[in-house]
Image (cartoon, rainbow, N blue to C red):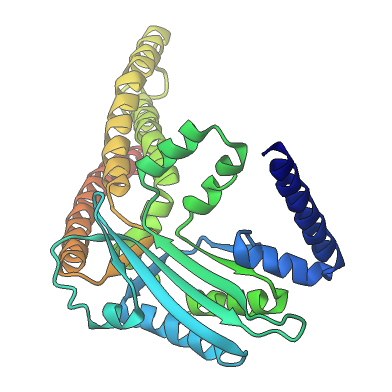
Length: 342
């Protein structure tokens, strides 16, 4: 019995030794290819996109057409395109084939938050006997879901934390490849397609310009109120000195006038802060997004609601600004009249 076990162990040892010899004789590229094909991870190239993007079904179909045309320029043995759609909340819908996606009616009331498309294909390459697997993945997301962020924190893996800038971007594409030239071509195809997409227009251009400069506008408005008050107060003093005291105003009256002017600056600062806060708040509430989907009925409803709300908030911003502008103009006109007639 013991002799049989020893023979089995010797036989296994000889087989492992022969396997090692076979592996050692394989060319490095073929060994790498075989390893990737069976259980390894190929090289990857990632491209991150930061520009805002507006997408509908036709845009996604155009992307698939561009990728498919590019793949036809290579010796592709087989190809499968899969897609997953993440809705608001945690619901995810997966399409096993591109035909399923094309035939989907998109009548859902839910809003889309994320789209992930994956092209999986085998390419025949001259230096390899077997077709080599390549994958192209494109992810477009309106926001990083809190669950994914918590998973990265819980993992404690530094490599995962390096992915945060990728996962928080509006879109990225990743190519897992054996042939580097194919990966570069696919990255360029996706980049050209992305640059050709429209940008979201949830906020009218007129209001969007003010929204981008809301901090400077609020600061200017905040300081303009006490400045115009000080100008008005000084002009009134000059007018009083010329028309009431004939250029010989008493020192005590001047001191009292300066005292009340300095004392009144504090409430004027508060008035300026209140008006500036209103203007800043209205501009801040103008809702935009770097990624806007228009697929489902819910998407279209959401776009219409946000656009209408932004118009209303824009009108409120104009009213708040008009009040501040009116006070400044009125103070400036009175100050100019008093100064001229001093």
